[in-house]
Image 1 (cartoon, one colour):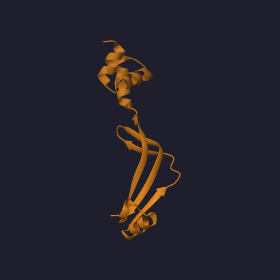
Image 2 (image 1 turned 90 degrees about the horizontal axis):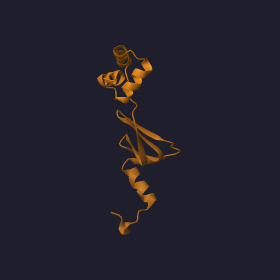
Image 3 (image 1 turned 180 degrees about the vertical axis):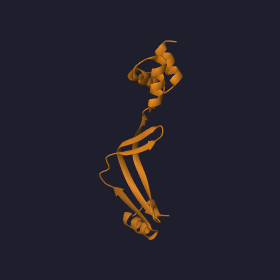
Image 4 (image 1 turned 45 degrees about the horizontal axis):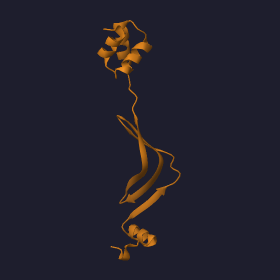
Length: 114
């Protein structure tokens, strides 16, 4: 496509403009976070490029991500049930539920020593 394999950046930009394509490097990006149900992908040192073509914008993220698992949400009803069944405090019930991944029966067994 390009003679000699060399690409003139100016020509490339002109060709992209003719195709209705625009590329923009986002400046001073501090962090990108992608939130999912299982946790977050966090990019701390990242380069982001926006490509605009035919009215649609696509973002390209370049960098290393780390995964942060989502915190377990324990419903208050579960805490109350474990408290009622074991006679423990809310803090102890919540701690047992967290340790068992939210499993009510396992939390009750853990607290009653059964």
